[in-house]
Image 1 (cartoon, rainbow, N blue to C red):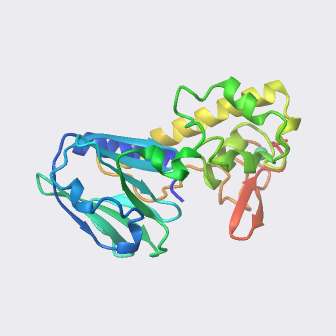
Image 2 (cartoon, rainbow, N blue to C red):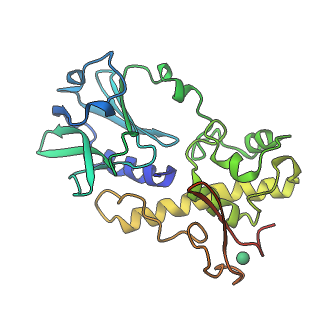
Amino acid sequence: MPELPDLEVLRRRLREGLLESRVLDIEVLNDRALKTRYFKPAVLKKGILREVSRKGKNLILEFHSGFKLLFQPLLKGWVSFEVPGEAAPLLRLSFEGGRELYFIEYENKGMAGLYIVRKLEGLSFMKKLGVDPLSEEFTIDYLAGAVGERKDRLKAFLVDQKIIAGVGNAYADEILWEARLSPFRICADLDESEVEELFRAVRSVLDSAISVLEEVSGEGLPSFEYREHLKVHRREGQPCPRCGAIIKAVYEGERGTFFCPECQR
Ligand SMILES: [Zn+2]
């Protein structure tokens, strides 16, 4: 699943490449991906891109006309200048200058969604989103307040989009490894210095992932789910890069939690 760093680098690159460009044509290539019916896709035609923004794991193309195209990739959605063979195209935006932007989905899951709206607040899932960890609202006080007396385990806490928007399964594992905290700890049991450590880890893991993704994608758009830089996530059986102990995994269905049993307490 694309997470905050993937979408943030995508946002920056689209912004650099397409800002103030005009949409010449729009074509819906998979009707079930279009989740709103109130406005016809043609309302985006001739629109000039004013801004590319992101909240949590949602990418938003904002036009001068006031219309917005929100893309929610969920598990397998992505954005690309061409359609890779293994992906299904959902929607194409043709910009002036011959540039074509495709919203695509790998494995044709039928989950990724496109929303054409004027107001983002009208979308129920946007109303429920918590604080974006790259925003100024994400402070140590906010995190301490959210951790509070919660009885959730740290892993469940970090992936809860209502609290911190943008962290998913992979980066939650990385953040907890960085903070040296076990994913199975209960929020309420953290002391002050551990909350500070967690806060620092959220920022540093996401910031450094963004730098890595910017570097590996060169001038182009980042590739779908680049994960080579991760330290523990999907590294079961390999040595911990910090202490050398063997990384373990605990699975709930297909979703794994990866951690070092030695240096995460
Ligand atoms: Zn370790």
